[in-house]
Image (cartoon, rainbow, N blue to C red):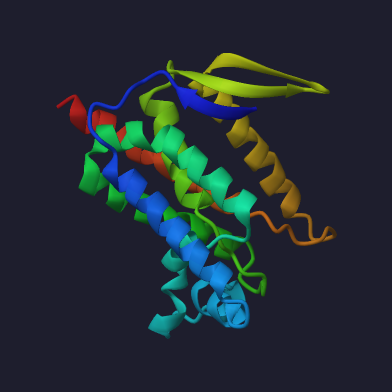
Length: 218
């Protein structure tokens, strides 16, 4: 299933969501221009668990900067599309500045969870998907009954149907959880997908939205 759009229009212009998209694309273009220095760039700004030293401040900022790097066109386009589809409504609920803080916090929590899952790994962790998972976690709680126009692939057939948000995002989370548990098997090759970042980001989004709904009722 691939979400195309939801049926809930934003009441305000989601400029923070679009700013994040713009920054990600701008940095990705910069990556493309670094034909000779890309490895150095990635080593500096990607999160490489084996390089983390909690006594060295400079080894910690990749917990955030890694969320603005991507490994290819499909990687960045997929992430940014999910952010555009779901981010505007969450930003609408939280407000612009709080949404920005929420997004950055989700990025950090997600990266830290992936680091914890493999602190000795030398594989760079990059991508906004952990932070976006936080957005998805918030969305499923704040807008569970919204309908998502979804592209569905059934063997060789492709169709468009409207699916409730809790099904689309719940199915996505279950896939992440199953793959995350599978990745703990030390007999298999290390996954290049940061499943635990997705899981932690999603759960963080749920917790924040539970808190948001609780204080909104006061």
